[in-house]
Image 1 (cartoon, one colour):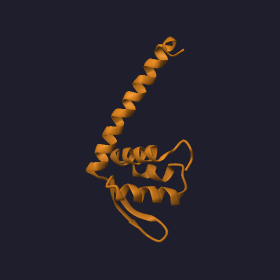
Image 2 (image 1 turned 60 degrees about the vertical axis):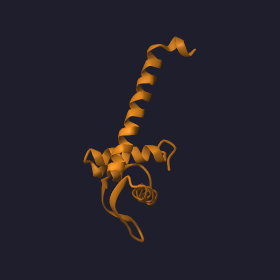
Image 3 (image 1 turned 135 degrees about the vertical axis):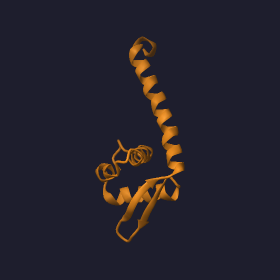
Image 4 (image 1 turned 45 degrees about the vertical axis):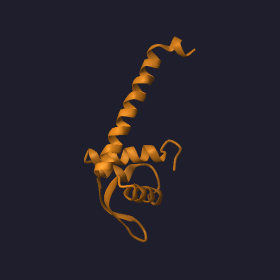
Length: 98
């Protein structure tokens, strides 16, 4: 998996895509299909998504976000907003971080 896309970012991206109704984004995540399918099946086992079946070659089906997935997305959205706000404040007041 590329350095810029770790598991947490992958989960957030998948859940956000499903929540926005843009499932087609899952095909353009930027990782190989085997790794993507493995991570999607892990997410299903964790109860974040449902609707997939694992075949010999691929994870098939139409994934849907679960209530637990919505909670995960909501929790991480708040953290992302707090992080972005802190980063913006840091940029406004650079002398505090010298």
